[in-house]
Amino acid sequence: MSSSSSKILNPSSAAGGLRGAYPWTPDQGDGTFRNPIIHADYSDPDVIRHGDDFFLVASSLNCTPGLPILHSRDLVNWTIINHAVRNLPHERFTEVQHGCGVWAPAIRFHAGKFWIFFPMPDEGIYVTTATDPAGQWSEPHLVQAGRGLIDPCPLWDDGKAYLVHAYAHSRTGIKHVLRVRPMAPDGSRLLGEGRIVFNKPDRHPTLEGPKFLKKDGWYYILAPAGGVETGWQVALRSRKIYGPYQDKIVLEQGGTSINGPHQGALVDLPNGEWWFVHFQDAGAYGRIIHLQPVAWQGGWPLMGVDQDHNGIGEPVLRHAKPALPKSPVAMPQTGDEFDSSRLGLQWQWHANFQEKWFSLAARPGWLRLIAMPMPAQAINLTSVPHRLTQKFPAAEFTATTRLDFSKLAIGEKAGLVITGMDYSLLAVERTASGCQLARAACQNALGAGREKTEATVVCPSNSVWLRVKIVFPGRCDFSHSFDGKKFSPLGKSFTARKSIWTGSKVGLFCLARAGGARKTGHADFDWFRFE
Image 1 (cartoon, rainbow, N blue to C red):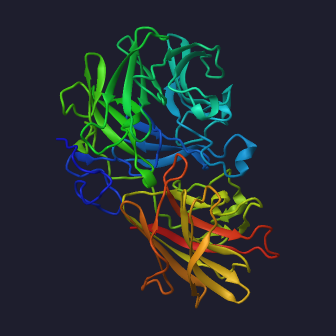
Image 2 (image 1 turned 90 degrees about the horizontal axis):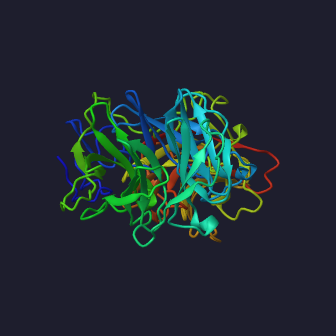
Image 3 (image 1 turned 45 degrees about the vertical axis):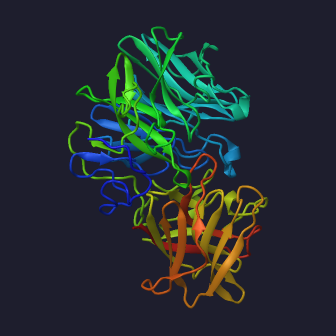
């Protein structure tokens, strides 16, 4: 069964509403799933099947640890199992670099190990490998230096290797172009310029994000076109690696509300089924992940359902699950009780992180954030690397944490924040006269915006419960409690906005003023929970 008439981001119109303990549950428990299968910002996904396991990787930009790896047994229920990159391989990422870092990756299995090729648009194309996706990944190796080389994907074929990639117009002035280049079989370097294999901007503008595969003697390149918010999915095919390539639109928005359905992975099942994992740009919620059935027709992969019988698929909102063994209901991790020796895999910092920023051992069962100073050049929180955040996990949710601020030094503050092009926070600050809880917001935060305080409350004790409720399509209401029972609103509603190439995020921070205080304090967080 399938449907394509509802607006997926609105939970009241999606099948089943919010279910169970997760903010968003795609598995409906009756043999069907609803899209998105991941209602979180796992941008530019690529997926492979290895035996009975599926592995998904996504871009992570400037956030660390980077290159998240997710695992599933049925393409519907996913959990985070690792990150392939601890910190980014360039010293400039000690500072926040908005919109830079890890762009669209590709994951493959070849010669007994897993490979992830990923671009950093100002540095070049890198590769990292592992024998176990959940284990240790090699240090990133620079395959090809070059500004503006993006979206690489390898293909090994008859003892030879190739790499297809696109270009970042912002770095090169080149757009709409896909190039295939010969590569050393060990993935260590490219061996030449190869050829431009497709460049038809009149038909497919902004062509990028290519994925390479070979099937039934055809070379296929899957690529999105038309732009992130308004585009479509293109399939290219040729009998020769360097073309010429035929082209066909295989997925488009059509009469649905799923804008820009494209860029992802074509995956086969042991029983012969094929599926397509792709993203949809959802504004403040980021690039959320959908799953489409695939039917091969005349040597082309039709994705979704051909509602208009024109040979082009449209996205489905609900469909029978892939014909795979039943898996437990699961979603990428969200809440954290801070009772482990490591942070949950859902957390990321906004630049290359340092162990001195936090501790889970200093007070067992609590996360301690050390009050690190703002960078000297920072004018607001968006330039602070030691923000600890995670992705929005659903269209609507509530996040709550308990904060012990007894060890904050004068001039330091800690709290809960929603970040993006604008941001808003609820934080405790210690002054010479005591502690106060403040709501503050910053408009045009990635520009010259300055943080402004909206409302304050005197803190009667050394702990507080902080809460933010997100209501579709991104309204954020903050509240607080000094007893953990009665919550009171503070400040006005805030509307979340996406950042550069990412959705908005929710998280925690502990901050000292630039230059720091004579005595460095800290803040302790007991847990972070979602409803």
